[in-house]
Amino acid sequence: MQEHYGIALAFGAVAFLLMYMGFIIQKLIAPNNKTELKMDTYECGEEPEGDGWLQFNIRFYVVALIFIIFDIEVVFLFLWAVVFKELGFLTFVEVFVFMAILIVGLAYAWVKGDLDWVKMKLKYGTGRYSAARLHEAETK
Amino acid sequence: MADFIFWIIWALIVASAALVAFGNNLIHSVFALMGTFLGVAGIYIFLNADFLAVTQIVVYVGGILVLLVFGIMLTNKISSAQISQSSVQKWLGLIVVLGVLTIILTAVLPHDWVGSITPMAFNETVAGIGKLLFTEYLILFEIASVLLLGALIGAATLARKEL
Amino acid sequence: MDQLNSYLILSAILFSLGLYTVVTRRNAVAILMGVELILNAANINFVAFSKFVTHSLDGHLISVFIIMLAAAEAAVALAIVLNLYNDRRHINVDEANALKQ
Image 1 (spheres, chains in turn yellow, cyan, green):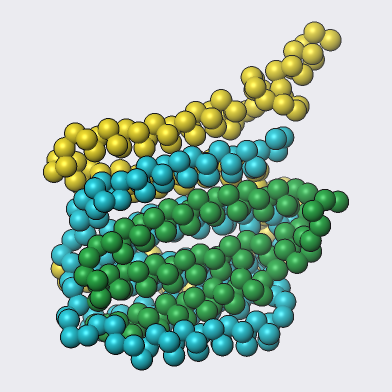
Image 2: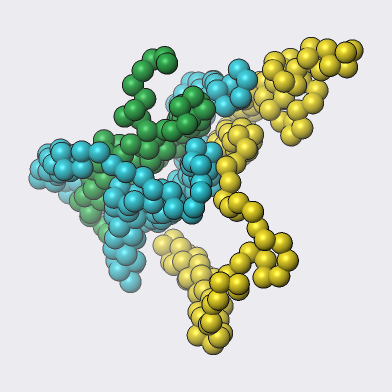
């Protein structure tokens, strides 16, 4: 069994080496004379304003959150898929209950508008983009 | 050869965990944490835990680490690529932690855990874990879904700007 | 590699480094990273004992549940950290000592 992992490790090592070979070769043979103008973001054209590193939007976090919950669901579903034939139909019901409970969470996020990227029609929302405020703005 | 790779992975885990604990740059710490997680996945393979090794990579490296990077990116006004972090009470903490380490090692190492039994080399673990999960630990499995639901709803509510 | 002690020592070191991270860091995200180290140390112990002592797969199953709990914990804790940041503009836990402003 262990030697299979040895093969996988060898593949990984070769892939890693091939990836870094490009960097190493260009380090060795490419000419290296850095000037301030060359290190600019755009060598000719716009002067960049501010920094490229800016703060993320918080909505990325909610998407990552939903991803990780269903990532874990996949781990459990994989275990189920392997033993389904052996243990029979009852496990199907069990997994159905499991998934139904998790889908409640997805429905919650959907209803609350966490999945919409442009939050213009937030039915149950509050704040700037709530339906009541939008309606107010339209009728004004 | 396998022995050699084992000790390489062992050293990788300790070194990268030390970088997490003692490093000054938060981004470097997160990438060192990735080294630790991958090393622990390697250790699982040496322990014949194939399913856990893959789970470790899928959930920890693919999920939790991404969440942590998001946490860093969302909570720092990044004016340069350096995101520094500082520690408090380093020496006191070091003394306490070394004491804890000594206690653990003196308690654990002299005990003869194994006896005369040889270690069990599991051939493959996925079907075995699945069978246990759907028979003996079924309640735990269903409760886990409720916990995940709570985590999803709670975190999504907290993360929304307007509650 | 075929001795329990090498895994136990590794786990103890990993646990200590995680504990050091938790007790000395000021940044809340760094503290979360320390918690993940501690959970990984516990996982190594579970799997090692499962191979060397109990010879059953229960330890593996508990490790799967620990990984699941770690993910849920990280998600909720980071949401709390984000709220702290929105409130205070920093996430230093030693300065977050008031229940309200």
